[in-house]
Amino acid sequence: MEEMASAFSSIHTSPHLREVIVFLLSAVLVVPLFRRLNTSPVLGYLLVGAVIGPFGLKAISDVEGARLLGEFGVIFLLFTIGLDLSLERLGSMSRLIFGLGGAQVIVTGLSIGAIAWAWGNPPQAAIILGVCLALSSTAIITQLLVENGEFASRFGRTVFAVLLFQDLAVVPLLVMVNAISTGVEPLSVDLLFSIGKSIAAVVSIIVIGRLTLRPLFRMVAGAHSPELLMAMTLLAILATAIGTELAGLSMALGAFLAGMLLAETEFRHQVETDIQPFKGLLLGLFFIGVGMSIDLSAVLDRALLVGASVLGLIILKVTIFVGLGHLFKLPRPVTLRGALLLGPGGEFALLVIGATMISGVLDPATGQFMMIVAALSMAVTPLMLPLGQWLVRKVRSRSDPARVTFSTAASSDLSGHVIIAGFGRVGQTIAAILTAQKVPYVALDLNPLASSARRQSGRPVYYGDVERADVLEQLSIGKAAALVLTIDAPETAKRALTVIRDRWPDVPVFVRAHDASHSRELELLGATGIVPETLEASLALAGQVLHGIGTPMDAVNILISRIRDEHYMEIEAIGTPHGDA
Image (tube, rainbow, N blue to C red; front, side, top):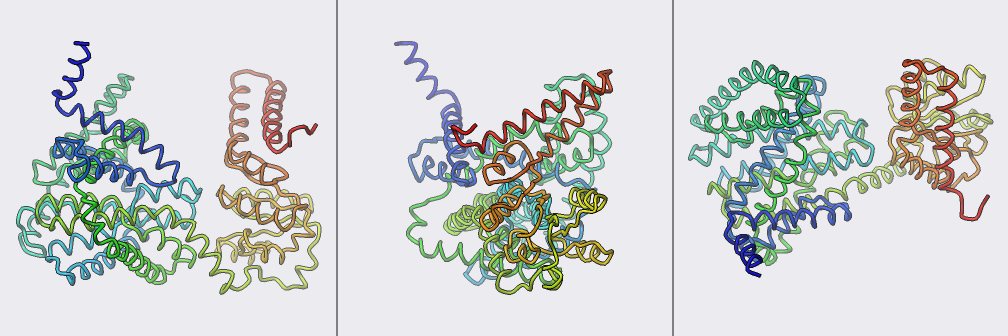
């Protein structure tokens, strides 16, 4: 009993131990719960912080200590963002990043800043509020695009380009917050001098980093010790962070520069994998610290104003992006879906608003209110992706002309043909094989320029959406020998298969699957044949390896055939009712 009493006593006396236990317990409980609800864990951390903070249960005694520890989460977040922003990548997407992304941040920031100034905020606070609320949630949106299989699509690339510029905008925004917090007036000579000094410090760090980082990492990697490579990564992050702090800038900016420097090296992917757990845990602690500064009871008294502000923020940002999308000649579906997804606020708004509150630039009451607005708008971000898909389908069905433009007489002549949905590399290969075997085909693709070019070269390729039943009817799907879905978007393939099976249950449908899990889902939806691309690529590569190390080709073919048959039998068993032979 005395030992147990001593243990509990040590919990109360050990510095920060209770805070660490509360944080780890929150992470273990909050993250799985919010992921099951398809909601960002960031909101869970904010809620936990508000509950356990000084305005709630007061479970954390050292609020400032927890907040300072959470700052390391921001450092690691900026480092991983820097890893994604190599100079080569920035150059390949420069028009979308610096053109569309820059216009979105500037126009939206000025609009929101003007509204904030009209509501009585000082110019410094209005500028900061405008820019930070113009930003969106990189973490949430990127995850949504990956999960929905649209990260590599034109829509996904467009949205990600805007997010990249927003991430870049955080750096000068943090410089501005740092300058204003030290008493420098916005748009003044002193601010310009401060920014110039910051640029000189950044250039110096980049030059030194380029000369030293790669040789140091090569030397450490030569020791073949994961621990030493991890230690070298932490040293690079903290050294550049301390360097920028000594120059009067934020430590987060130094971490960002370290990430950009390492993005150009061969160690980028290993470093990103090693640092991911640290970033997630420490960033969670940062958001808990932010949540501790939120007084929910004070904001609930103005619930209607909060709701109106969230809705107004999203409507304003959506309207501005729709106008910019038209100016940059983006396809209407990309513009509409991108506007909705980028409409809510992001985690950097919480970071910047919290920093301006601490520095005294922003009134605490206004800061708490705006953090609630930003957090609630983030909460609806996952809903924007399905909303955009639904809205695009509605707009298309009402206003778009028929996508398949051949005549009714021509379409009535189609019979015994194969419909290919998606005319990328896989679709073109299938078309070439069908042509060699004198099998007629007609193809659909959602790339208007590529579709037009292929039509002009004599190929039966049309701009069309395979998810639309009226488009498929124009292709005489009822008289087709088969339909092939080669789309590299798992969710789109599933939706298209559902439409086809509802209207034409007897048409054979062959589908390109992403992996085994996607194959099982397609089997349950009624696909006639499924080819998992990861399985076939793995089997082909394994076969070459076996043959290369001396295994006879006949033995390799037998082994690969047996593995392939076993895998497809497992998929077919998913769709077989219990009791069937």
